[in-house]
Image (cartoon, rainbow over all chains, first blue to last red; front, side, top):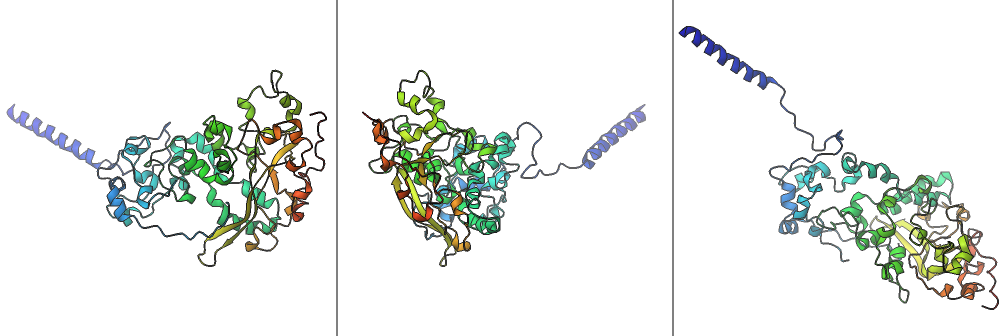
Length: 83
Length: 367
Protein backbone atom coordinates (compact mmCIF):
# COMPACT_ATOMS: atom_id res chain seq x y z
CA UNK A 1 0.00 0.00 0.00
CA UNK A 2 2.84 2.31 0.96
CA UNK A 3 4.66 1.59 -2.32
CA UNK A 4 1.47 2.22 -4.26
CA UNK A 5 1.16 5.66 -2.60
CA UNK A 6 4.76 6.43 -3.51
CA UNK A 7 4.18 5.36 -7.13
CA UNK A 8 0.95 7.38 -7.31
CA UNK A 9 2.77 10.40 -5.88
CA UNK A 10 5.57 10.07 -8.43
CA UNK A 11 3.03 9.68 -11.23
CA UNK A 12 1.17 12.81 -10.13
CA UNK A 13 4.41 14.78 -9.96
CA UNK A 14 5.38 13.58 -13.42
CA UNK A 15 2.04 14.62 -14.83
CA UNK A 16 2.39 18.07 -13.26
CA UNK A 17 5.85 18.48 -14.77
CA UNK A 18 4.55 17.30 -18.12
CA UNK A 19 1.76 19.83 -18.01
CA UNK A 20 4.29 22.56 -17.29
CA UNK A 21 6.40 21.52 -20.26
CA UNK A 22 3.37 21.49 -22.51
CA UNK A 23 2.58 25.10 -21.58
CA UNK A 24 6.17 26.11 -22.22
CA UNK A 25 6.08 24.68 -25.73
CA UNK A 26 3.08 26.78 -26.69
CA UNK A 27 4.08 29.73 -28.89
CA UNK A 28 5.14 32.69 -26.86
CA UNK A 29 3.02 35.78 -27.40
CA UNK A 30 4.57 37.89 -30.11
CA UNK A 31 5.28 41.52 -29.54
CA UNK A 32 2.59 43.65 -31.08
CA UNK A 33 3.53 46.09 -33.73
CA UNK A 34 3.84 49.68 -32.51
CA UNK A 35 1.39 50.73 -35.15
CA UNK A 36 -1.38 48.18 -34.87
CA UNK A 37 -3.31 47.06 -37.87
CA UNK A 38 -6.70 48.58 -38.41
CA UNK A 39 -8.89 47.38 -35.60
CA UNK A 40 -11.92 45.27 -36.24
CA UNK A 41 -13.45 46.32 -32.95
CA UNK A 42 -15.69 49.39 -33.04
CA UNK A 43 -13.00 51.55 -31.52
CA UNK A 44 -9.27 51.29 -31.29
CA UNK A 45 -7.92 50.60 -27.85
CA UNK A 46 -5.00 52.53 -26.56
CA UNK A 47 -2.13 50.54 -25.22
CA UNK A 48 -0.48 51.47 -21.97
CA UNK A 49 2.55 53.72 -22.11
CA UNK A 50 5.90 51.90 -21.82
CA UNK A 51 7.38 51.77 -18.31
CA UNK A 52 10.15 54.18 -19.27
CA UNK A 53 8.76 56.54 -21.86
CA UNK A 54 11.75 58.43 -23.15
CA UNK A 55 9.63 60.48 -25.51
CA UNK A 56 7.44 61.79 -22.71
CA UNK A 57 10.36 62.21 -20.35
CA UNK A 58 12.01 64.59 -22.75
CA UNK A 59 9.00 66.32 -24.27
CA UNK A 60 7.53 67.26 -20.89
CA UNK A 61 10.83 68.66 -19.63
CA UNK A 62 11.05 72.28 -20.65
CA UNK A 63 14.67 72.73 -19.61
CA UNK A 64 15.78 69.65 -21.46
CA UNK A 65 13.96 70.74 -24.59
CA UNK A 66 15.60 74.15 -24.38
CA UNK A 67 18.99 72.48 -24.12
CA UNK A 68 18.48 70.00 -26.92
CA UNK A 69 16.29 71.88 -29.39
CA UNK A 70 18.12 72.63 -32.59
CA UNK A 71 18.07 76.32 -33.37
CA UNK A 72 15.85 76.91 -36.33
CA UNK A 73 17.50 78.01 -39.52
CA UNK A 74 16.68 81.57 -40.31
CA UNK A 75 14.49 81.61 -43.36
CA UNK A 76 15.10 84.48 -45.71
CA UNK A 77 11.65 85.55 -46.76
CA UNK A 78 11.78 86.43 -50.41
CA UNK A 79 8.07 86.55 -51.05
CA UNK A 80 6.61 90.01 -51.39
CA UNK A 81 3.06 91.21 -51.13
CA UNK A 82 -0.11 89.59 -49.93
CA UNK A 83 -0.28 85.83 -50.23
CA UNK B 1 0.76 86.01 -32.40
CA UNK B 2 4.51 85.84 -31.87
CA UNK B 3 6.21 82.76 -33.32
CA UNK B 4 6.79 79.97 -30.82
CA UNK B 5 10.29 79.12 -29.65
CA UNK B 6 11.62 75.79 -30.97
CA UNK B 7 11.24 74.10 -27.57
CA UNK B 8 7.82 75.60 -27.06
CA UNK B 9 6.55 74.05 -30.25
CA UNK B 10 7.08 70.53 -28.94
CA UNK B 11 6.52 70.83 -25.18
CA UNK B 12 3.88 68.28 -24.22
CA UNK B 13 1.63 69.22 -21.33
CA UNK B 14 0.78 66.92 -18.45
CA UNK B 15 -2.90 67.29 -19.29
CA UNK B 16 -2.32 65.70 -22.69
CA UNK B 17 -1.03 62.57 -21.04
CA UNK B 18 -4.30 62.29 -19.14
CA UNK B 19 -6.42 62.85 -22.24
CA UNK B 20 -7.92 60.20 -24.49
CA UNK B 21 -5.32 60.73 -27.20
CA UNK B 22 -2.60 60.65 -24.58
CA UNK B 23 -3.39 57.02 -23.89
CA UNK B 24 -1.74 55.97 -27.13
CA UNK B 25 1.98 55.48 -27.04
CA UNK B 26 4.00 58.16 -28.78
CA UNK B 27 5.43 55.62 -31.21
CA UNK B 28 1.98 54.40 -32.20
CA UNK B 29 1.26 57.69 -33.92
CA UNK B 30 4.70 59.14 -34.58
CA UNK B 31 6.87 56.13 -35.34
CA UNK B 32 10.45 56.59 -34.21
CA UNK B 33 11.95 54.51 -31.44
CA UNK B 34 11.88 54.54 -27.67
CA UNK B 35 15.39 55.61 -26.83
CA UNK B 36 17.11 58.04 -24.47
CA UNK B 37 19.24 59.17 -27.40
CA UNK B 38 17.53 61.94 -29.33
CA UNK B 39 18.82 61.00 -32.76
CA UNK B 40 17.91 57.35 -32.32
CA UNK B 41 14.50 58.23 -30.93
CA UNK B 42 13.80 60.48 -33.89
CA UNK B 43 14.90 58.03 -36.58
CA UNK B 44 11.95 57.47 -38.94
CA UNK B 45 9.90 59.91 -36.92
CA UNK B 46 6.59 60.97 -38.42
CA UNK B 47 6.20 64.53 -37.19
CA UNK B 48 2.75 64.90 -38.70
CA UNK B 49 1.01 61.52 -38.47
CA UNK B 50 -1.76 62.65 -40.80
CA UNK B 51 0.65 62.29 -43.70
CA UNK B 52 0.44 58.55 -43.13
CA UNK B 53 -3.02 58.54 -41.70
CA UNK B 54 -4.04 54.94 -42.19
CA UNK B 55 -4.25 53.35 -38.78
CA UNK B 56 -4.03 56.66 -37.00
CA UNK B 57 -6.74 59.35 -37.18
CA UNK B 58 -9.07 57.05 -39.05
CA UNK B 59 -8.94 54.38 -36.38
CA UNK B 60 -11.44 56.30 -34.31
CA UNK B 61 -12.59 59.06 -36.66
CA UNK B 62 -13.38 56.88 -39.64
CA UNK B 63 -16.48 58.85 -40.60
CA UNK B 64 -14.56 62.11 -40.88
CA UNK B 65 -11.57 60.52 -42.56
CA UNK B 66 -13.82 58.95 -45.16
CA UNK B 67 -14.56 62.41 -46.60
CA UNK B 68 -11.74 64.66 -45.45
CA UNK B 69 -9.14 63.71 -48.08
CA UNK B 70 -11.56 64.97 -50.75
CA UNK B 71 -12.38 68.17 -48.92
CA UNK B 72 -11.01 71.42 -50.28
CA UNK B 73 -8.92 71.91 -47.14
CA UNK B 74 -7.08 68.67 -47.76
CA UNK B 75 -7.07 68.43 -51.54
CA UNK B 76 -6.82 72.12 -52.55
CA UNK B 77 -8.38 70.92 -55.77
CA UNK B 78 -9.68 74.41 -56.52
CA UNK B 79 -6.14 75.51 -57.37
CA UNK B 80 -5.42 73.04 -60.18
CA UNK B 81 -8.92 73.55 -61.54
CA UNK B 82 -8.36 77.31 -61.74
CA UNK B 83 -4.90 76.89 -63.26
CA UNK B 84 -5.87 74.27 -65.80
CA UNK B 85 -9.05 76.03 -66.87
CA UNK B 86 -6.87 78.83 -68.26
CA UNK B 87 -4.48 76.42 -69.91
CA UNK B 88 -4.20 73.39 -72.19
CA UNK B 89 -3.41 69.77 -71.29
CA UNK B 90 0.16 69.86 -72.59
CA UNK B 91 0.94 72.57 -70.04
CA UNK B 92 -0.49 70.67 -67.09
CA UNK B 93 2.81 69.05 -66.01
CA UNK B 94 4.54 72.43 -65.79
CA UNK B 95 1.59 73.90 -63.91
CA UNK B 96 1.58 70.89 -61.62
CA UNK B 97 5.22 71.58 -60.78
CA UNK B 98 4.37 75.18 -59.99
CA UNK B 99 1.43 74.06 -57.89
CA UNK B 100 3.60 71.59 -55.97
CA UNK B 101 6.21 74.24 -55.24
CA UNK B 102 4.03 77.20 -54.43
CA UNK B 103 0.47 76.22 -53.65
CA UNK B 104 0.36 72.79 -52.08
CA UNK B 105 1.86 73.88 -48.77
CA UNK B 106 -1.48 75.48 -47.95
CA UNK B 107 -2.94 71.98 -47.70
CA UNK B 108 -4.22 71.42 -44.19
CA UNK B 109 -4.36 68.19 -42.26
CA UNK B 110 -6.09 67.07 -39.06
CA UNK B 111 -3.11 68.19 -37.05
CA UNK B 112 -2.83 71.60 -38.72
CA UNK B 113 -6.14 72.65 -37.20
CA UNK B 114 -6.54 70.51 -34.11
CA UNK B 115 -3.04 70.15 -32.64
CA UNK B 116 -0.67 72.69 -34.13
CA UNK B 117 -0.58 76.02 -35.81
CA UNK B 118 -0.37 75.69 -39.59
CA UNK B 119 3.05 74.49 -40.70
CA UNK B 120 3.62 77.45 -42.99
CA UNK B 121 3.47 79.63 -39.88
CA UNK B 122 6.14 77.54 -38.27
CA UNK B 123 3.87 75.00 -36.60
CA UNK B 124 4.02 74.34 -32.87
CA UNK B 125 1.43 72.99 -30.48
CA UNK B 126 -1.72 74.99 -29.89
CA UNK B 127 -2.03 73.63 -26.38
CA UNK B 128 0.75 71.29 -25.32
CA UNK B 129 -0.28 68.57 -27.82
CA UNK B 130 -3.85 68.54 -26.52
CA UNK B 131 -6.32 68.03 -29.33
CA UNK B 132 -8.36 71.19 -29.66
CA UNK B 133 -11.85 70.24 -30.83
CA UNK B 134 -12.73 73.71 -32.08
CA UNK B 135 -9.65 75.23 -33.72
CA UNK B 136 -8.88 78.70 -32.36
CA UNK B 137 -9.87 81.22 -35.01
CA UNK B 138 -6.84 83.49 -35.15
CA UNK B 139 -4.23 80.75 -34.68
CA UNK B 140 -5.63 78.43 -37.29
CA UNK B 141 -8.47 79.71 -39.52
CA UNK B 142 -7.35 83.29 -40.13
CA UNK B 143 -3.71 82.31 -39.86
CA UNK B 144 -4.22 80.90 -43.36
CA UNK B 145 -7.27 82.84 -44.52
CA UNK B 146 -5.79 86.12 -43.40
CA UNK B 147 -5.26 88.61 -46.18
CA UNK B 148 -8.82 88.54 -47.36
CA UNK B 149 -11.19 86.82 -44.95
CA UNK B 150 -9.34 87.40 -41.69
CA UNK B 151 -8.49 91.05 -42.16
CA UNK B 152 -11.99 91.81 -43.38
CA UNK B 153 -13.77 89.86 -40.67
CA UNK B 154 -11.67 91.20 -37.81
CA UNK B 155 -11.78 94.78 -39.08
CA UNK B 156 -8.05 95.23 -39.65
CA UNK B 157 -8.44 97.69 -42.50
CA UNK B 158 -8.33 101.31 -41.39
CA UNK B 159 -11.74 102.97 -41.29
CA UNK B 160 -13.52 99.78 -42.30
CA UNK B 161 -15.36 98.08 -39.48
CA UNK B 162 -15.11 94.37 -38.90
CA UNK B 163 -17.94 92.06 -39.77
CA UNK B 164 -21.06 92.62 -37.66
CA UNK B 165 -21.13 88.91 -36.87
CA UNK B 166 -17.77 89.37 -35.16
CA UNK B 167 -18.14 92.89 -33.76
CA UNK B 168 -21.57 92.38 -32.30
CA UNK B 169 -22.20 88.67 -32.43
CA UNK B 170 -18.68 87.63 -31.32
CA UNK B 171 -19.08 84.73 -33.71
CA UNK B 172 -16.05 82.70 -34.66
CA UNK B 173 -15.60 80.96 -38.00
CA UNK B 174 -17.22 77.69 -36.98
CA UNK B 175 -20.38 79.48 -35.92
CA UNK B 176 -21.20 79.52 -39.64
CA UNK B 177 -18.69 77.07 -41.14
CA UNK B 178 -19.60 73.85 -39.36
CA UNK B 179 -17.13 71.09 -38.75
CA UNK B 180 -19.14 68.94 -41.12
CA UNK B 181 -18.71 71.45 -43.93
CA UNK B 182 -15.00 71.85 -43.23
CA UNK B 183 -14.39 68.11 -43.23
CA UNK B 184 -16.55 67.27 -46.19
CA UNK B 185 -16.79 69.08 -49.51
CA UNK B 186 -19.74 67.89 -51.61
CA UNK B 187 -18.68 66.29 -54.88
CA UNK B 188 -20.07 69.12 -57.00
CA UNK B 189 -18.01 71.73 -55.15
CA UNK B 190 -14.61 70.05 -55.18
CA UNK B 191 -13.39 72.17 -58.06
CA UNK B 192 -14.55 75.47 -56.60
CA UNK B 193 -16.05 76.35 -53.26
CA UNK B 194 -18.81 78.33 -54.97
CA UNK B 195 -20.01 75.53 -57.21
CA UNK B 196 -22.07 73.50 -54.77
CA UNK B 197 -24.93 74.32 -52.50
CA UNK B 198 -24.56 77.54 -50.50
CA UNK B 199 -23.12 76.44 -47.22
CA UNK B 200 -23.23 78.37 -45.07
CA UNK B 201 -26.16 80.40 -46.32
CA UNK B 202 -27.23 83.71 -44.76
CA UNK B 203 -30.84 82.56 -44.82
CA UNK B 204 -30.10 79.65 -42.51
CA UNK B 205 -30.18 82.17 -39.67
CA UNK B 206 -31.94 85.10 -41.34
CA UNK B 207 -34.99 83.04 -42.15
CA UNK B 208 -37.43 85.87 -42.84
CA UNK B 209 -35.37 87.54 -45.57
CA UNK B 210 -37.40 87.77 -48.75
CA UNK B 211 -40.35 85.99 -47.16
CA UNK B 212 -43.92 87.31 -46.83
CA UNK B 213 -43.35 88.53 -43.29
CA UNK B 214 -40.07 90.29 -44.12
CA UNK B 215 -40.47 93.88 -42.92
CA UNK B 216 -37.66 95.12 -45.19
CA UNK B 217 -39.19 95.93 -48.55
CA UNK B 218 -35.85 95.97 -50.39
CA UNK B 219 -35.34 92.29 -49.68
CA UNK B 220 -38.58 91.45 -51.44
CA UNK B 221 -38.02 93.88 -54.30
CA UNK B 222 -34.56 92.60 -55.14
CA UNK B 223 -35.31 88.96 -54.40
CA UNK B 224 -32.66 86.70 -55.82
CA UNK B 225 -31.40 89.32 -58.22
CA UNK B 226 -28.68 90.37 -55.76
CA UNK B 227 -26.52 88.31 -53.47
CA UNK B 228 -26.74 89.43 -49.84
CA UNK B 229 -23.21 90.86 -50.02
CA UNK B 230 -24.14 93.32 -52.76
CA UNK B 231 -26.03 95.40 -50.20
CA UNK B 232 -24.34 94.32 -46.98
CA UNK B 233 -20.60 94.16 -47.59
CA UNK B 234 -18.14 97.04 -47.80
CA UNK B 235 -14.71 97.48 -49.38
CA UNK B 236 -12.64 94.32 -49.50
CA UNK B 237 -9.22 93.22 -50.70
CA UNK B 238 -8.27 92.61 -54.30
CA UNK B 239 -4.82 91.62 -55.55
CA UNK B 240 -2.96 91.87 -58.84
CA UNK B 241 -0.13 90.10 -60.57
CA UNK B 242 1.11 87.22 -58.45
CA UNK B 243 4.23 85.69 -59.96
CA UNK B 244 6.04 82.66 -58.63
CA UNK B 245 9.61 81.43 -59.02
CA UNK B 246 12.41 79.52 -57.32
CA UNK B 247 15.05 81.70 -55.73
CA UNK B 248 18.52 81.63 -57.28
CA UNK B 249 19.96 82.55 -53.89
CA UNK B 250 18.25 80.06 -51.60
CA UNK B 251 16.60 77.54 -53.87
CA UNK B 252 13.34 78.23 -52.10
CA UNK B 253 10.02 78.95 -53.82
CA UNK B 254 8.68 82.46 -53.47
CA UNK B 255 5.96 84.70 -54.86
CA UNK B 256 5.59 88.38 -55.57
CA UNK B 257 2.26 90.13 -55.68
CA UNK B 258 2.28 93.38 -57.60
CA UNK B 259 -0.55 95.14 -55.79
CA UNK B 260 -3.07 94.72 -53.02
CA UNK B 261 -5.86 97.25 -52.67
CA UNK B 262 -9.38 97.73 -51.39
CA UNK B 263 -12.28 97.77 -53.81
CA UNK B 264 -16.03 97.42 -53.83
CA UNK B 265 -17.37 96.61 -57.27
CA UNK B 266 -20.69 95.07 -58.16
CA UNK B 267 -20.58 93.04 -61.34
CA UNK B 268 -22.46 90.40 -63.23
CA UNK B 269 -22.45 86.98 -61.62
CA UNK B 270 -19.78 84.85 -63.33
CA UNK B 271 -21.28 81.62 -62.00
CA UNK B 272 -23.79 79.55 -63.90
CA UNK B 273 -25.11 77.94 -60.79
CA UNK B 274 -28.70 77.42 -59.70
CA UNK B 275 -27.63 77.65 -56.07
CA UNK B 276 -26.39 81.19 -56.71
CA UNK B 277 -28.86 82.55 -59.23
CA UNK B 278 -28.05 86.20 -58.61
CA UNK B 279 -27.66 88.61 -61.49
CA UNK B 280 -25.32 90.90 -59.53
CA UNK B 281 -22.62 90.00 -57.00
CA UNK B 282 -19.55 91.70 -55.54
CA UNK B 283 -16.43 90.86 -57.55
CA UNK B 284 -12.91 90.52 -56.26
CA UNK B 285 -9.82 90.70 -58.46
CA UNK B 286 -7.78 87.56 -58.01
CA UNK B 287 -4.00 87.85 -58.36
CA UNK B 288 -3.60 85.78 -61.49
CA UNK B 289 -1.86 87.26 -64.54
CA UNK B 290 -1.11 85.74 -67.97
CA UNK B 291 2.53 85.48 -66.89
CA UNK B 292 2.00 84.24 -63.31
CA UNK B 293 3.77 80.94 -64.00
CA UNK B 294 6.22 82.03 -66.68
CA UNK B 295 9.14 80.78 -64.54
CA UNK B 296 7.92 77.28 -65.40
CA UNK B 297 7.46 77.83 -69.12
CA UNK B 298 6.32 80.21 -71.79
CA UNK B 299 2.66 80.94 -72.30
CA UNK B 300 1.40 78.40 -69.78
CA UNK B 301 -2.00 80.09 -69.60
CA UNK B 302 -2.91 80.39 -73.30
CA UNK B 303 -6.61 80.32 -72.46
CA UNK B 304 -6.34 83.11 -69.95
CA UNK B 305 -9.50 84.74 -71.27
CA UNK B 306 -11.70 81.73 -70.54
CA UNK B 307 -12.02 82.70 -66.91
CA UNK B 308 -12.62 86.15 -65.41
CA UNK B 309 -10.03 87.79 -63.22
CA UNK B 310 -12.81 89.55 -61.34
CA UNK B 311 -14.37 86.66 -59.47
CA UNK B 312 -17.46 85.91 -57.41
CA UNK B 313 -16.79 87.09 -53.87
CA UNK B 314 -18.37 86.79 -50.47
CA UNK B 315 -16.58 89.52 -48.50
CA UNK B 316 -16.49 88.79 -44.79
CA UNK B 317 -17.22 92.33 -43.62
CA UNK B 318 -21.01 92.28 -43.47
CA UNK B 319 -22.71 95.42 -42.15
CA UNK B 320 -26.38 96.17 -41.64
CA UNK B 321 -25.92 99.64 -43.08
CA UNK B 322 -23.51 100.24 -45.93
CA UNK B 323 -22.83 103.16 -48.27
CA UNK B 324 -24.70 101.45 -51.10
CA UNK B 325 -27.84 100.61 -49.13
CA UNK B 326 -28.44 104.08 -47.68
CA UNK B 327 -31.01 104.87 -50.34
CA UNK B 328 -32.17 103.53 -53.69
CA UNK B 329 -29.94 105.90 -55.58
CA UNK B 330 -26.89 105.16 -53.49
CA UNK B 331 -26.71 102.20 -55.81
CA UNK B 332 -29.03 102.86 -58.75
CA UNK B 333 -27.26 105.16 -61.15
CA UNK B 334 -24.05 105.12 -59.13
CA UNK B 335 -21.49 103.98 -61.72
CA UNK B 336 -18.65 104.24 -59.21
CA UNK B 337 -19.62 101.00 -57.49
CA UNK B 338 -20.17 98.90 -60.61
CA UNK B 339 -17.46 97.07 -62.49
CA UNK B 340 -17.55 98.90 -65.77
CA UNK B 341 -15.10 98.39 -68.63
CA UNK B 342 -13.07 101.45 -67.73
CA UNK B 343 -12.17 99.83 -64.38
CA UNK B 344 -10.75 96.72 -66.00
CA UNK B 345 -7.18 96.50 -67.30
CA UNK B 346 -7.19 96.59 -71.11
CA UNK B 347 -5.37 93.25 -71.31
CA UNK B 348 -8.07 91.65 -69.13
CA UNK B 349 -11.13 93.01 -70.93
CA UNK B 350 -11.76 89.82 -72.87
CA UNK B 351 -11.48 87.64 -69.78
CA UNK B 352 -14.02 89.78 -67.97
CA UNK B 353 -16.59 90.40 -70.68
CA UNK B 354 -19.29 88.43 -68.92
CA UNK B 355 -18.88 90.15 -65.56
CA UNK B 356 -18.56 93.73 -66.75
CA UNK B 357 -21.68 95.82 -66.22
CA UNK B 358 -22.47 97.55 -69.47
CA UNK B 359 -25.59 99.34 -68.35
CA UNK B 360 -25.79 100.78 -64.86
CA UNK B 361 -29.23 100.30 -63.27
CA UNK B 362 -31.10 103.55 -63.81
CA UNK B 363 -31.69 105.95 -60.93
CA UNK B 364 -35.10 105.68 -59.27
CA UNK B 365 -37.01 108.91 -59.90
CA UNK B 366 -38.10 110.84 -56.86
CA UNK B 367 -35.78 109.02 -54.48
